[in-house]
Length: 452
Ligand code: FCB
Image (cartoon, rainbow, N blue to C red; front, side):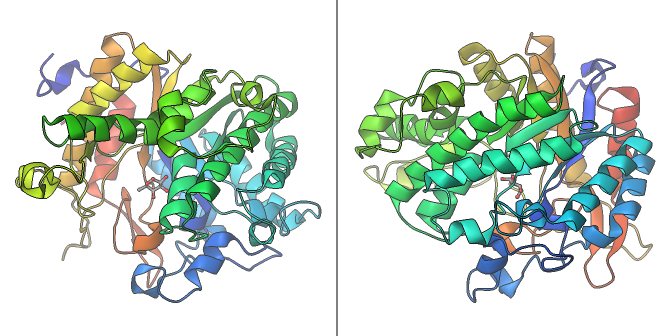
């Protein structure tokens, strides 16, 4: 099937169509109704960390506007909604004392979703660690994994009678390596040893959470959402091929291998060359708890370059001057989604795959007629869905697709500049305007095919 032939891009009738968000990016109400401080509250309140000095203090004010947001989801015909639960809203100190109003919020949200015929997919950790736990060492400390299992217990005991799809973690690579090594995300540290310990304790917390959730939510489907990518060397040189192996090891295999029961990839253990005393007996077995699905967050391929090769030969903007890019500079490469899905199925064979995030930021504007027309987002989504359909047709057990994001929202260190939503948010008034991509996506969901 050629990628231009969208009429062939058909999905099964039980395909899960959804949209995704996360708590810190949309909820606001950062200190209301007993919520504790998270590491993102602290990070955003530290001058110089976030573009434009933006914070998630108010964000999309979803904590107050959730009814309207669920009504919009229903109007758009979403079958599923992936949201995350704010850990410090439930447990202000990270463990121990429960904040009932926080639980009430998610209880109401879940009930409203079910009333609207929308299946809730809950993520437990989309990066907003309680600051109280960071003060005790954060993810580099093993106690945080224990606290996470307790939090998973509380959340699944409270919601597990109604929520049947769970992801303990979203993108642990980002939490560990951008938060503790690159320092661009909360808590803003720059230590490889901390990042490696954080990655392990994230995975361990996940592994401990899986059976807890299954116990509390019988028949639950439990998975994980990873940021996954294909990695392409920037030049044919040996040095860039080597850089690509390391990049793939760092982003993909460091998480996929232990989850698939293979332990940490040995070439990467050698590459890091650091002791890993935090890996204790039984940990790898816990991390390998069988999953019902692997969640794939895909935005772009990664081009790997070695500093040993002259920049003129392997610098991506130089080598690819005409690459199509989104407003945040990410390259648009839909065919790589096909490659990624095929590779995941071939190399790891998880029971099912879900695309838990895919989408694009563009400089959307409200037109004189009050509408927001975003043809480039439609084109991005269309081509990625065609690639997904191709993988499905070739035997990949792809069960669903969630567009990132339902709403324009707080894009972490980039603040409110990038707009990823299929619904425009006017932050001054909190008015929501579905973009043309939202109406296009409604037709896709209705017909289970990629429409024009
Ligand atoms: C992913 C995150 C999500 C959002 C998108 C653009 O890495 O999971 O919160 O920021 O990128």
